[in-house]
Image (cartoon, rainbow, N blue to C red; front, side, top):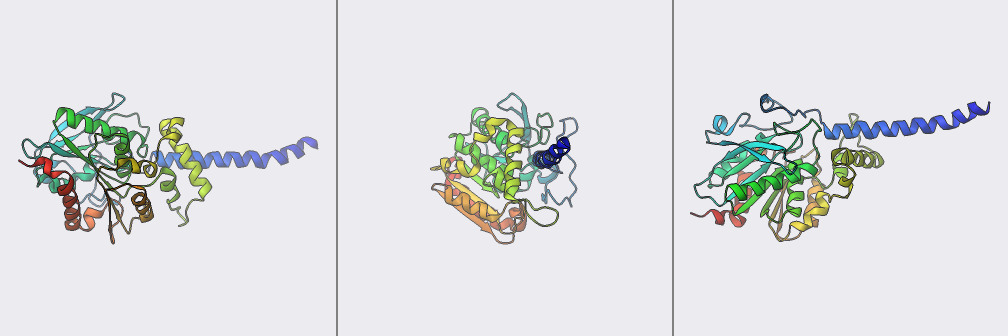
Length: 326
């Protein structure tokens, strides 16, 4: 009888712990490997993209700069901090250009996410580096999944260092979307060699990103579950040391006095607009926040290409293009 009583008292606690562990593991697995995640080898090539793919809103660019844009380009392979190969494309700019752009894709995406915007930069003579972060696209990896800026921010710095060393760029602007937006914020905060920063629909922290996720029934995760999943995901992504790494919100003040442009759409269903406002409030000068009415996640250019071009070109005119004057 006593044994039965003990079992009845202990069993709910055991089941509760098991349930919490299942939530942490399942939720973090989805964060590391979202449904669209697919790492491929160089031999396999970049994943096939259908023009009606709902996640990759890449109107006008699915293959490469030559096929889609009629622009010359070079395949590049650059070592990451751990020796892994980061693979991508270099679209040359004006001969003798001394400033350029490094573009950073979102979580589980690849170099093609900024292919549609390359003409914006090319028209003013800026060379552009488009690359796949580790564990994504066809860059090296072991199928570990994405890391929501932890590894990716290191890859940004590796590309900037390579561009300055090998291409002779004096100044570099980094531009990223979604996870890429968070990555350029984290990279620039830690890397003073990054000169200009543009972050589109970046999140404030991994916890905030997960907390904003909508469940199938239309509700949001409870706060305790979001925190548990975020902690588990961070440790699985980069070990316990990841818990002490600054979030984008904690990192963004360190970018000042370098210029920062934040961009966000009002219809972003993945990362709420409120997170952009928090980043803006935390950042030091000079910083600007551009909010585009009606734009969805990672689709500001698709929603209003002319306005996107005007805003980004104006920012680059003020902070980068003078370095490229003939």
